[in-house]
Length: 321
Image (cartoon, rainbow, N blue to C red):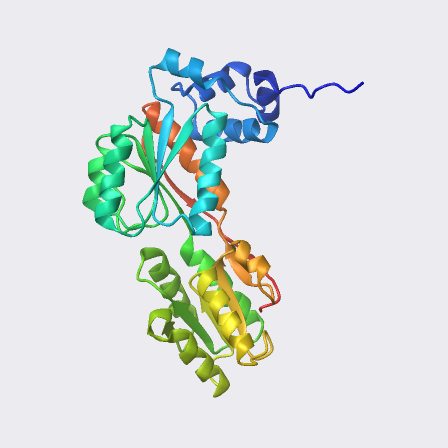
C-alpha cells in the first residue's frame, strides 16, 4: 500500500531556513520587520520544499490584491524569461500571483502596459526592461512599489534595483581568452543599451587594439572576413544570440572553432548548450536575480527603503574557446 507524500508545512520551512515559525509566517504574509536577506532565504526554502501559503486567506486579511505585475520587452528572450521564472517561484512561495505584460521594444506600448498593470491594482511592479526612460520609471515608482531588473539608462531613487555586474562579466570573458593566448580579440555587439556599453567599455580597457563589429552593419560577415585574412583569433559577443550566429556562420565557412577562432558569449542561455561546439558564456544568475527582485518588492510593500543589488557573474567554459 502506497501513501501520499506529506505536504510541507510552515514548520518545515522554518527549519530549512534556520529561522522561527513566526518569522516565516511574517515573511510570507508580507508583514514589516523582516529583513530582505531573511525574506529571500525564507522564500528560497519555501520554494525548494514546494510550500505554498494560502493566498486567498492572505488577501482577505491583508486587504492587498497579492498580485505583482511584471513588465517585459521580449517573451522570446531567454534572459528575461529566466528572470521571470525566479520571480514566479518567489511570488508563489509568498502567496502572490504574477501578471505578465509584454510591451516589446515600443516605449509607447510599454507605457500603455504599465497603465494597464496599475489599473489592475497590482501591489507592485517589476520592470525587466531597459526601454523605459527615467520619467516613465519615476512616475510609476511614485504610484506603486517598483523594482527594476537590468540596466536602464536611469533608475529613480524610489525604485528598487538589481542588475548584473556587466563590467566583471566582460573582464572574465576577455581574461579567459587572453589566458588561452589570444591578443587579437574582437567585440561584437548589436545595441547601444547600457549593459552592452558597460561590457564594451570593460573590453576596451583590457584589449590593446580594440576591434569592434556591429551585427546590424554586416558585422559578423566582416569579422569572419578579417579572421580569414589573419585578423582576430577570438571574439567576445555581447550576448549568446550574437555568439551563436558567429559560430554558425564560422562553421559554414569552414573556420575551425576554437582552433581558428575562439568565441565567448554572454548570458549562458540554453542556446549555449545546444549549439556545437558548445558555447563558452558568461553566466548571469538570472533566476536568483528574479527571486531577489521579488524579495525587494515585498520589502517595499512593508514600507522598506529601496535597495540596490549587484549580482556576480561567472564564466562557463565550453568547446567554443
